[in-house]
Length: 279
Image 1: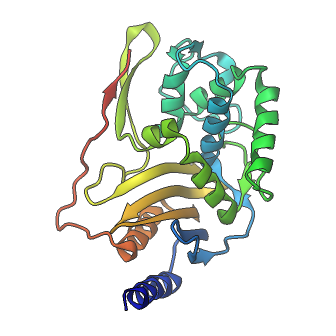
Image 2: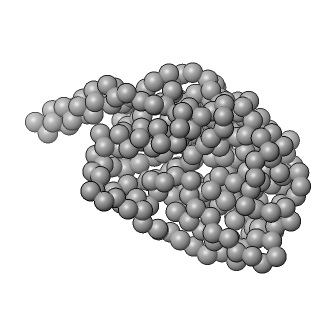
Image 3: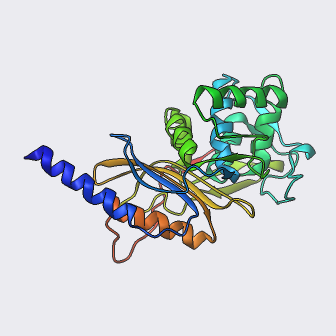
């Protein structure tokens, strides 16, 4: 009887999710326990992935076993030469590799991601070789990564491949801790301290148990999101790609969350958690 109930519940969620209308052009939701695909939409299409790239950057950097306490400086060459975007991390700032990883993942800073690749043991070419090897090891056959930040539209993947990325990144405690931080303070150039926030507005929101998170955006990729969540006792991975607006991406995530068991409060609030101050 219990097994039959579980089957019926799973069928309900699968059917409801499958019928959902999504704003994101490419998407997949996977039940982590069973591996069952609960929803997919153009999940095999190869598309740009923007800053979702930084999860791969983080894994490769951590795999290198380079000292996380080593100081690295932000140089002129770390500035965005592709989109010419700005950064709150000035050239000349010196951070530990751990702090650079924190800012690259939590607040999706591009300069720190570029610096992590540049200071990878053996330099940027060795970094890219390690990325290629990692993609092969994970079986991400439809993924191509040309640089560390995700600014290049040549960084492409499929929603299906990105589930593998999310599951692999979840095996790194440093990545799960950082991507589920809501905010952090880091000392930058000239001793000035700046507060950085998570780019995922659902991190810290009551009722959401987020196990891994990364957002992304470029004009080519649209609004993107990877999340692993635990809602109503169920763990699931969702990948949302190429939503036309930030609000559309969050609406998709909220609707998926509700079908997975999230119950929204009448007055939802953002709760700061895991706040840390670094010097």
